[in-house]
Length: 217
Image (cartoon, rainbow, N blue to C red; front, side, top):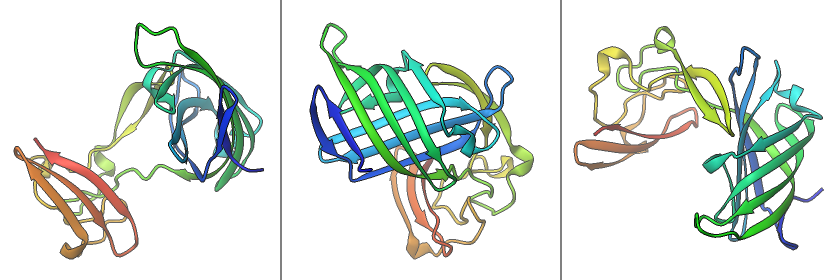
C-alpha cells in the first residue's frame, strides 16, 4: 500500500510518514497520545489524538474520532473540523491507517470546507523524553511530574520532565550532557543560537541521539 493524501479529489503521494507516541491517561483509563505526520510535496499532514490501550499494539483495529481538534490536526495549511482515524495493523515499529475528515480555511470568516482522505504506512517510535540533566548529567527520574493537557479535544494526563534538574534550573549555556542517554557532548557537535538571554540548541551525542530545545529567556 502506498501512502497518499487527497483533498477534494486532488491527491499526492506521501514520501514519508511517522507516528510518535507516549503513555497518557484520560478519565482514569490507560492509553496513548499519538502524533501522526506525513509529507509529500507541498502537502503536510499532522494529526494528534488520544487512544486507549496498555501496549501500542492495542491501537490495531481501533477507530478514533477527533471532533473540534483545533491546531492539533491540520493538513495543507488548513485545520480539521473533524477527523476519523482507522488504524489497521499497528506494530511497535510500523503501522497502516486511513484518515477521513473535513478541513476548513484558517480564516475564521471563511465558510470554505474540503473533504480529505488519506492512507498511510508509517514508522512508529516512542517519544524520547529527557532522563538526564543536560547541565550536570544527573538523573531526572526523581523530578518527574504529571501535567494535564488537551490533545485532539481530549483531556489527558501524562508525565513531564524538564531537561534540567532543580540545582541547574538557571543554567543557560550550551548543553553538556545528552538528556536521552546521559553521555557527554562533544562541543563540536553542539550548535547554539543566543538572543535576549536565551539560548537555542541542537546537539548530537556519541550514541546518535539528536536533541533540540532552548534554555533561559
